[in-house]
Length: 345
Image 1 (cartoon, helix red, strand yellow):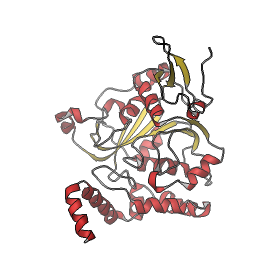
Image 2: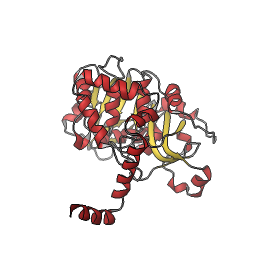
Image 3: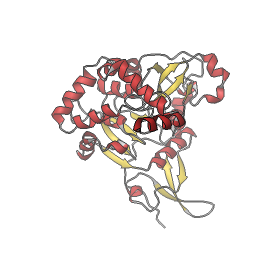
């Protein structure tokens, strides 16, 4: 009996031998890795790379890194559209705007939507243009693919996508279980060339702490050949050693550490600051026409020397403190409830 195979293209080689050659060359020494975002992107993100982004939706995204990828004009990237929202919106700005082609291939699970905020008009234009190759997966399937790579396996079996149109558009294969004979989906390992992950705290060596859900970021860090970490703040190594169980990503996975307060803006950083819904709406409105969008990008991204200048253009310290207070407000539900009731009165 012939078993089914998805007709999508595989954008990353699942071979464990190739990954092991890279990982075995990584240093296990406690070497300081602090650098700037610009330097990290310049050295670690290369044209044609397979890129993956950490976080979930607009929560805990490494916005500063994605801006810099766009600003430096990195080209022909493959991308893991796992739980992508504003990060994909930014990358899509490098297509159809006169700046070459940032995105060339996308493994798509969730990419064009910004959740309840609506769809990105420009990301939709890019994906409908035909200049980006697309293979479809589920969110879970991409997480399992990262897990396989993190485990050093060429694939992992699952039942996700069986009997669905998504399977038909994926690059997965149906296999037969050698023990039970039942049909399973073989999901190929995904080992990105480079990953960018934003965390709450890190030490100079790359040991990272994340508050709240980590989604698949632990697997992503272990699966990727090169890892750029941005953090809200650097903390002493002694603090990491004092509570090692809080380390979500260990230093030996990390290649660069960049301290970027408010580095997830305009996304949300759990426990730190709320998302800037006003600015996200501004992005969506600017994308309606290419002419307006080019002007928007020129002002906010390409004429900004770095992420700090971008933050200043978005309202600076005053706006950032408003967002911090919003997040703290929602962190106190009992107090917030009484305050909201008082406000309504």
